[in-house]
Each structure stands twice: as C-alpha cells, then as structure tokens.
Length: 125
Image (tube, rainbow, N blue to C red; front, side, top):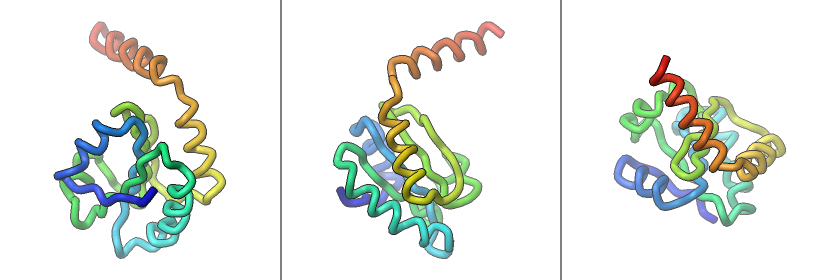
C-alpha cells in the first residue's frame, strides 16, 4: 500500500475510517527522517491491512502542535482511533516490524477497558 500524506483536512477522517494507522511525523530538512523513509516505505508494502501515513511537520504545524510533536521523526500508531504508541526516533527495519506485530496483537477491547478504568480512577481521585 502506498504511503499517504496527511493534512489537517484528511487526518481525522483517515484515523476514523481505518482501524490501524501508522503515522510518521517528519520534515524535509531532517536527516534521520530521510534515512527512515525507505524503511517506512518498504515495511508499508508488506502490510495491506495497515494505513501508513506521513505528516510533514513543516507544512502541517497545527497537527504537529496538536499531537505535541517535539522531535522528529516521531512514530504514532492508532488502533481503533486510540493512540497506542508514540515515540520519537527512527527505528531499524526489524524493530519496526516487531513493533507493528505487537500493535496488531493488542486486544483493543482490553485496551479500552483499561482506559475506562484509568479514567474512572482519575475522576474519583
């Protein structure tokens, strides 16, 4: 699957309409971003069930600010509209593939239940 560019216009709909989205926040001047790009592209070709997207933080400063992107590249994984992973830094191919496998294996019902439990505890605390 081709990597898609996300903007403020299509970000929300992409997250809402797809159960598994990986977002790479990057900038054209960023050396580590440029070196990670071929790995990201290669891995995306092996996962038809996952939407791979990129956000150019230079052009989409509002998105970068909204998600508090402080360093790039930053990878963010959404499952069922929930951010389950967010970390700065480029990953080598094998760890990136492993991360995707772990994200795929997550029981999202349990994740949502845990989130509800934490929210309830925060509200009662």
